[in-house]
Image 1 (cartoon, rainbow, N blue to C red):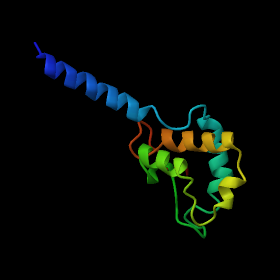
Image 2: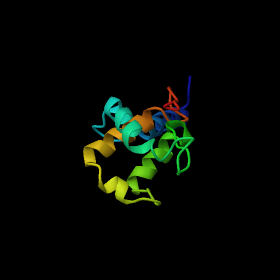
Image 3: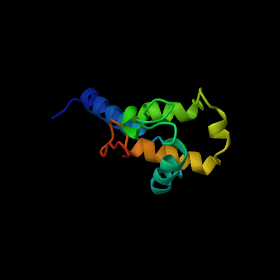
Length: 109
């Protein structure tokens, strides 16, 4: 039998775990996001492109969330401005769902 303090610790750990995984883009569609990622992002972020290669697995779920929360497209900020809020949510959800620490990491090859 667990002591009350141990039970409280377990409850807090579960809440923190659920809270940290429930982020990403609320209302994002990962299927549309994958299509948009291939169309809008891969042209500059693939092995044979001008920019660094960038795949969903390049970052963790938390790193993708921070990337989008801070609007971090430093080299070409106009890229994000050309996309609607929904399109950005879709891309973010796709990247989040297939990040390095997700259940289904993906390179989007």
